[in-house]
Amino acid sequence: MKSDQISQKEIYREGSNLALAGYQLIEALLKTYIKNYFEIAKYFLAGKLHFGFTGRDYDEAPLGRLLQVFSKISNDEKLLKDLRSEVQHRDQIAHRSMLVLFAKTGPTSEELSSMISELEVRNRKINELLKRLHAKHDELISPWNEVASVDS
Image (tube, rainbow, N blue to C red; front, side):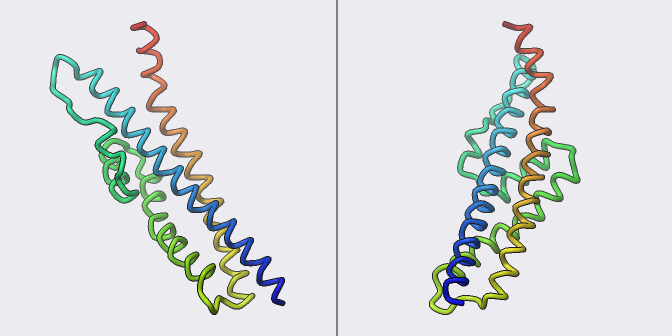
């Protein structure tokens, strides 16, 4: 039983690390999307309107703030809703993993098994969101790549 719990804790640790890294990738991709959106807007507004926003304004922004900006520059309501729903899960994973991995009395084997299953669900969701966000970013820069190649 003791070695089984150690093994489960290791699986849980790996799953929570994977999930938290996935959330970091979501943040990084949102920052890239925002930066590129602002660069494209600046290009098309040049000489017509001043546009002083840059992606650097959001380099240190947390996920909630990034989603607030993303909501202003993307019309994909479903993606935005799904991304927003992950904020509470990310916070829960971060807090719970500290308790599970470092508390003197951790969860039972059954509880740990249930938490591992939850992490598997979250990791699949994160993967799906990363694919959708990446596709949204490709959609954003695709016309820009055509304009940039003509200007070269």
